[in-house]
Structures are given as structure tokens and as C-alpha cells.
Amino acid sequence: MNLIKNLTFATLALGLVFQAPAKQAANSSPLRLTFEKSFAGGGPAGYLFHFAGSFDGDLTGTLFTGVRVLEPVDRKGNILHLEADYVFSDAHGNYLFTASVAGNSNAHTGKAVLVGEVSGGAYDGAQVHVEFDDLGGGTYRGTVRVMHAGGH
Image 1 (tube, helix red, strand yellow):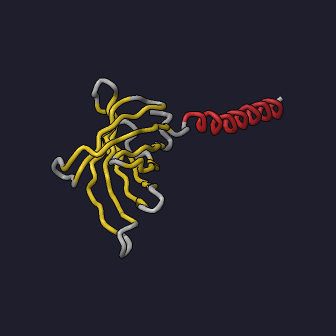
Image 2: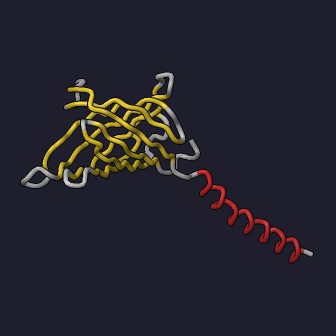
Image 3: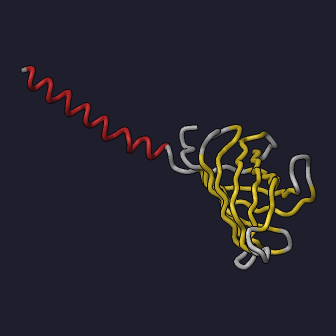
């Protein structure tokens, strides 16, 4: 009888162990956002220049992008290293979170890839991946993925 109880308990425990990762995986899918932003001028304090725009996808709202560092990586200046803060607010202007990212943009392809993490607000500490394309005229369109954001 004890053997049956122990086997039943072990079977239930294994079932829970194997179900937990499936539930965890469902809760850890990335937050996906698409954005469009346009050059908005110099500053403010702490930034060389900034962009204003909007985003939608899993959330909707307004986007402020402040560029902290912009420096050439190659001698011709075609590859630029940049560091920026992407500040997301909801449609009512309420602060959601800030993603601090860094990476390179390529003037030949008009594409950029930036990585970093959420440095404040919801999803604090989550990894962030940003890709964007230069549409010309100071306008950019791209995507943001916030990893393991599901449980927040």
C-alpha cells in the first residue's frame, strides 16, 4: 500500500514539475512593440539629441528616445555606436518603463541593432532587443522586444 502511495505521489510530483516549465514559458513570452519616431531636436539635459514617436503592439503609447552617445566606429563614419534611453509612456502620458540600450547603426543598410535592459519602471531588469530602419528625413521605424516580461 505504501508503495502505491509513494508511486502515486511521485507521479503527481513529476506531473507538476513538467507542467511548471510549460506555464512558465507561457508567462515569459517577450513583450513585443513596434514604433515610429522622428528627430525632435537637441537635448534635453543628459542627451545629445532626442526623438519623439509612438508605439503599439502588446502596449500602446508614446515614445521618447534620448541619445546619450553617438560616435563613429569606422574611419569613414558609416558605422556608428550609439547609446540611448527609450522611455515608454501609455496613451495617457503615464510612465511605463525605460529601456537603456547600446549598439551600432549602419549608414549603408540604414539598419541598427541595440541591446540592453529595462533600467526603470515595469519590467525592471528585463533584457531588451531593439532593431530599427532609417526611413529617411529623420524618421525611423522598428521593433522592441522585452524578454521575460510576461509575469509583470
